[in-house]
Length: 310
Image (cartoon, rainbow, N blue to C red; front, side):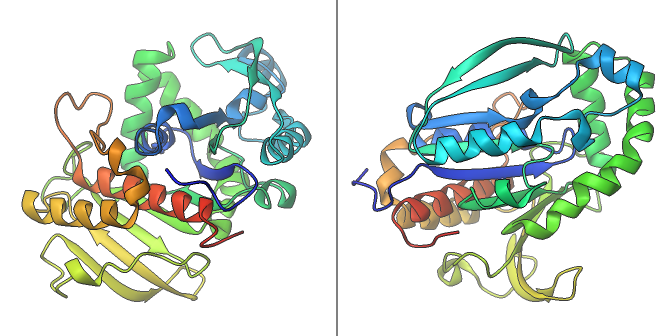
């Protein structure tokens, strides 16, 4: 890659509710940019209380009072200035706080978690901001699968936790949507509401806070062609572009879109490889996921070149 034209690491924020797909998205983006060039930070590590203490205090991990927001702000500023941090670590499997981790800044930093846009000080540190908003029933299925297989919860406990967190989701998580440059929503097709993997559709709400790539060479205006872009109104009434990618987009058409996006970031072409993979997918590739990861990586590389700034 050529020498960057900015003098600080490029920081991407990925915010969304629990099990919204943040880690899956992060993994693919890191693969595109080159894992040796990416540092990943999870804001869950900044929990003030462990799982047992939260239960005793009757507070959820989504509540800002349950997190060291001021230390998150400090660490983001330090990383943006090119300085290392001693990051706390929260072990999701055991629900405990463990030994901190020394993190040195790299050219690209991905910060993913629940409260990444909670304060103005944090929001000012990002070059690109993503909000994940999958269909709620889909997110619940993802959360049950993850928490019962990886975090030691029963299905009943997961459902009880979801109900107990709803007020905090409404108060603290969903309001962060307004600060994102791109809002990403995965959802199952009408003819297969149980789909949770490769054939999910995705909708991108593209706000004018970033200069988005010109996709006109691969758009034909047909909503049934697998990819469609139109001008619409966001939930706040403001004009946005909405990019829809179908889970059953034909292989050849998906490859054309991928080729176009890769051609716009030739600096990363040597890293072209296996994107669009997801946990439990085996050899299956999700084209909507791959294209989403490529679009975000495009914005990070352009930010590194000084094409756009926060």
